[in-house]
Length: 87
Image 1 (cartoon, one colour):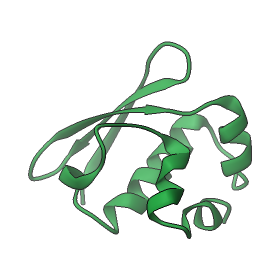
Image 2: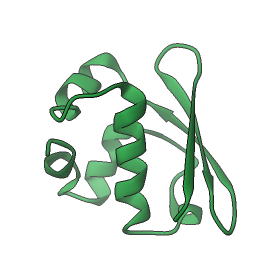
Image 3: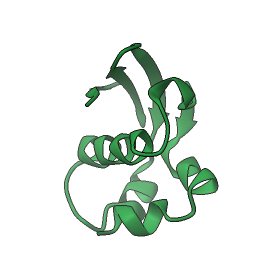
Image 4: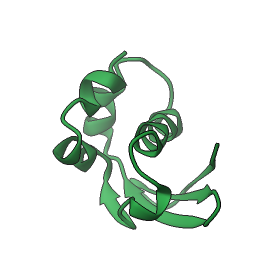
């Protein structure tokens, strides 16, 4: 299983490093309004980002994850994303 490291940056930005066979780095943005909408299961922004990357890693290798994206973009590729995050 990959190790996910999340570092908050300025504003709504986070750097996510996924340590797997190949280590990748991703810049993710998560606004307060998107966090409130997606985090029905509770927790922090970092918790939601971690759960989101675990969701992605169950579906694709870390090398296929975009290097920079707004967290809600996941729903464009995987329509079930928002309902899964709400559980």
